[in-house]
Image 1 (tube, rainbow, N blue to C red):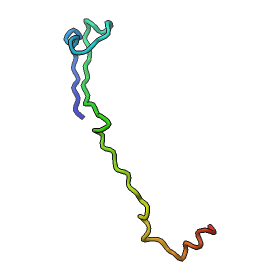
Image 2 (cartoon, rainbow, N blue to C red):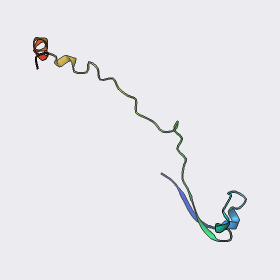
Image 3 (cartoon, rainbow, N blue to C red):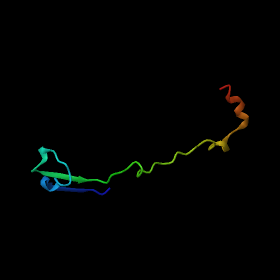
Image 4 (cartoon, one colour):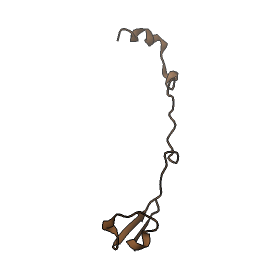
Length: 68
């Protein structure tokens, strides 16, 4: 992830960012990170595993499962 980190005089930032009085006329550290929206994040699709093991079923044992 790319980012930017700089030390600036807070007076240079007054026109861009609303700063509290305690930060005015001081050197401040500015860190810029990319913003990730919920839409930007790729979420893996849920997979349906129903029937994925059907090739292993043994119908002769299915009757005995109810007694287990």
